Picture 1 (tube, one colour):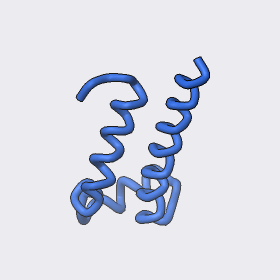
Picture 2: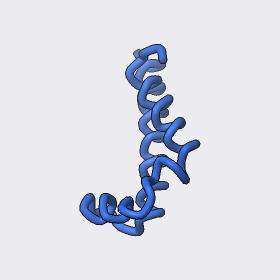
Picture 3: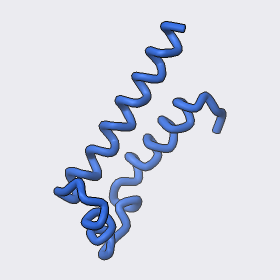
Picture 4: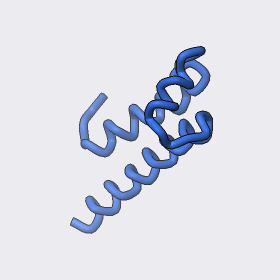
Length: 66
């Protein structure tokens, strides 16, 4: 049980750091401003490696195979 809890916490930390990357790119925590900042270019394009890491972290946290 302790190992499972430690794994979940470690995946949550990686997801949190990835989300902070997007917040740094926008400069705000407001959801409306995040959406408006993507009007020019969707953040999935310049931050593609971060998008892949987010996807893999979400899969790892739910213990699902890709």
